[in-house]
Image (cartoon, rainbow, N blue to C red; front, top):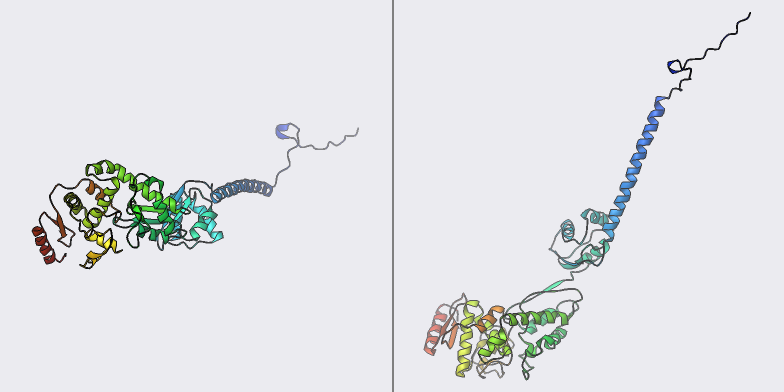
Length: 376
């Protein structure tokens, strides 16, 4: 009997009779894990790049139409500090994105001055504005100035005109009813174009925005003056002195020019009222200077003869119009003069202090004191 040889069949796990799996090379496993890892990194990188691109695009594009922001650039201020200011003011949303933008598009040379920008403005428009000249300006209407001098300052601004500004002041509808009918339209040399509107501007600083018209600027100044007048009850108090509100502004302008400092103003106002009550000429040098188109200097005996309705040495009563822009303090002093019987005053100290007198003899003594102190 023959015996058939049995082919050996390896036993599977635990003798199940199943064939074992083929062994996997270690290198293959490492490659597969490496590919998986790089795949995860690639997905994350693509996500970050997509987010970064979206963030940069958002910062780059901005959202035009935001609130206006005035950015002041100092002389020699570095661009990095300007960029930080833009972010702090909400003009841009990211300094990093702005730096990246300037890396590709160039860093602008920025002139010192004020610029009008807008919140969340696109980078291209921000840099275009900063690369041009400043477009926001300031005008300071100081006490004692004149409408003509303010107009000259307006004329120095790009796109503005002294003539247009003066015309706008004269025709501002807000002044309707404030200036009495028949008030002379003329004024002193160099100020004739201001006419009856002389002095009717509010003091203080004004920002002149891009594309702002001369009429809009004039209205701001007139409106500020009228707000001070209303707040001080100018018209009501003026009636107690038998004057119109407009005449009270004329008094305030005299107080401004003759008193100069607040410590003198209410007593100067009393001198004006006392002289008016007695029918005396006011005899104030400031009116002569105005009549001659000057704002300072000595007044000689020859100057006292200048033929002008503003010369209060030749003409009694108030000048036909204010002679300067009065401060709120001068208006308050004109409305609330210090009680007293003074008819004269003179500067007696280089500090600006004035001495007041009831009699002419007292005035002469004060003038000698002024000469001794080097103030006269």
